[in-house]
Image (tube, rainbow, N blue to C red):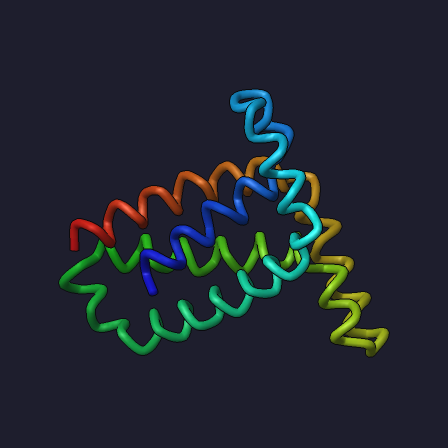
Length: 138
């Protein structure tokens, strides 16, 4: 799950910051264009994965003492998945939660995060690559 969560974070991070990624890797345009229609669904999957990872982190909090770097990185992946999933999956979440108060809260939260979406996406890519390396080493 750790490695898959890291790969999902890299994917969601690239989708969250396409302009920044395409300036460095213009040959990825076709690949990103093919994934764009699935952005909302991937956002919801990222939220679910982030929640599962956060729950797992809470259940194994004792391991933080013996493997501090790994479990802090694990927490960073979980939180990054939640934030980027919220940004990418907002439209799908609006359809799932039809209550006006919930939709309004989701919109307010994403309005605050939207200006930082590119930076959060790049941070997600970096944290995802870091966690993938750590999960291979541990």
